[in-house]
Image (cartoon, rainbow, N blue to C red):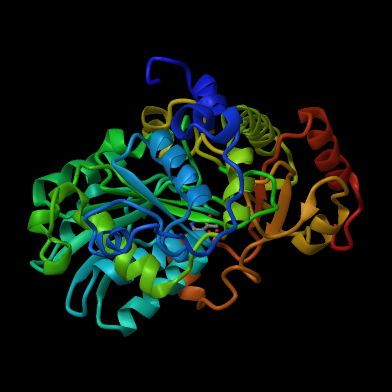
Length: 417
Ligand SMILES: *Cc1c(COP(=O)(O)O)cnc(C)c1O
């Protein structure tokens, strides 16, 4: 299938990868929690890993397996595992691969809940160094003998810092440490993390992949590039058969089976349906974002716009080199001092005031008093989050309607003006 274009593949993936029953073009939703074995030796072999079979749906089931195949194909990986949310994909994977005494280098520009989770991981004895990943030098300086890996997002939210993924990938390969990339913000075909040597790709399926704001899910994809033999934390029970599978086996047993944040089969079906239009939705959202960013950048009532597609963005050049088909659909901005961001948000009519991102609808949020409310002022400053910043997750509406909504909101008279 790899010769065909992205959009062709995404609409035929389920049919071709999973050969649904009765010639259907979709894998059906399979509700069974348990699976019958006509011969008792069969269930023994399945438990002992000598035979691939669904046994109990906390660990695997047909609809979830079909979605895993599609996600793995999307990222060009060795295998994928789904979880109930993006957060559980991240937390279950890290809990299953790390031990107290290990060290991780982590981007200081992270989705707020992921950042909060790393603080929890530190409480369990994993040493964390937060670093500015826009410059490889900071990553190199953070390296310690017990460093197990580097964790970063592609384009950070809300300030849109772009990680130097090419240099970090190269460095992780040289050190033989895990390169973990959360690709939620720039899923294929915008960016292929495997091309820049990612070992594990995380994705919140809740965002662009499903796209419609009606289902939660998460995934981890093993690209097959990492040498698990030198990792040191794979339990002997999972050091069996093909060593390329060691990582996924441990994540599946310790992360998915034992922690139990399983994706529901109904959710897998909804996510697979959303995925069929991923490239079309992303193209439109990126186009709207570029136009809206330029409109805001030129507006006298806007102080600053953060969007990698603007030439003024500090990592614009790196973004242009790394992101092939658009700069993503998150942008943030600050208003001139005499406009209250809360009043401004209330003046938007089409744009929805809501958290969440990667939705078909355009959403706006004041970030400092919401997502980053639990952080100290110093922590917010290190992340580049200012008190009055507004984050926009740009949707797929007609561009003119979005620009009109912002124009009308700017044209309102504000108390302080
Ligand atoms: C939303 C998000 C997550 C968490 O995903 P959920 O599905 O909401 O749990 C993780 N990383 C990034 C970059 C996100 O935007």
